[in-house]
Image (tube, rainbow, N blue to C red):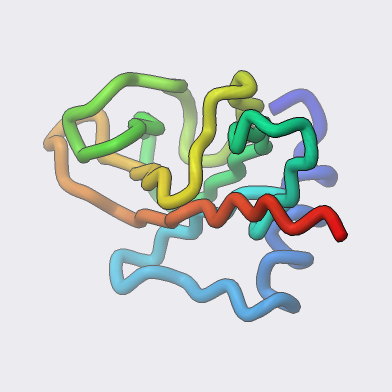
Amino acid sequence: MRCPACLMLLLALAACTGFERAESGAMLTAFPNPVVVCDGTGLARVRMAWFREGMSWVQLRVGSPDGSLLAIGPSHGDQWTGKWVHDGAVFYVVDAATGDVLAQTTVEVRRDCD
């Protein structure tokens, strides 16, 4: 991430909205979540942010712990998705060395445009 202070702000905002730290101590969140789309596609673009103190490298995966790799990086960071996130999409932060799941989150996409 280019702005460590920005990541800390994202994670602080997540904490204020009911975001919880996983048992592993890792945090993973999507912004916005839920996300509202009104273009008829039902697909969204979200910003994923993660933090895991004491880890050297983690992977951000989509769909399953060994699913598509969205990002790999240090123990904290963020990554925008493309406009392909559907309702119920699950993201995982995985220990790059062991493959252990550190945290997961599900994105809610709403088509509520009224």
